[in-house]
Length: 252
Image (cartoon, rainbow, N blue to C red; front, side, top):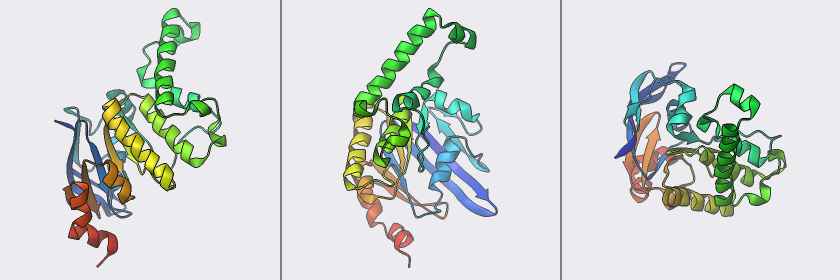
């Protein structure tokens, strides 16, 4: 069953067609990866799903409901979380505090109750802290729990951003170039986390990625884009050998 379905997505920026009739589906429980050269339209798709951009045409459905024109603040509440190509964390806050922020969509108490710190609010805070601690344990971040983001190396920050997305308890996790800036060992660790998120947590994962070793290691299916259009779709081996994909990356 398709958890996410995109139909005929189209959007332009300054007269340039960023997406031109893109169709794809992401099945519940799979790792689906979008590849393509720079400017292919990959991140534009993420921004449409996250409702940062409005499409000029097309339709997006999540869990059977249309979200094409949904207000951006409602997306996380539906069960969609994402990371960014450029890390977006609060650098002066601790790892724990950054992850706790992701629990906001799960709050069920009002402002007055939180000001009075009622027993219901206290129970909610305990439950949220326990949820975040599970993510910290899952990603082996306990050693960094109370460390400010500004004091962490880049590779650990990438894992923290992944953790913040997981703390929101998504059904669909969007990862925008998760291996960007990582060394070989860190990329292998990222591949491990992605597969464990899929198999251990049961979360569907949609990835944008350039590192074809990571793509091959984690992906069930791959969609190749170029100039805002679909070139090919299939398993990683098929896509790596597809002549149109090779031409898009290498030229000719």
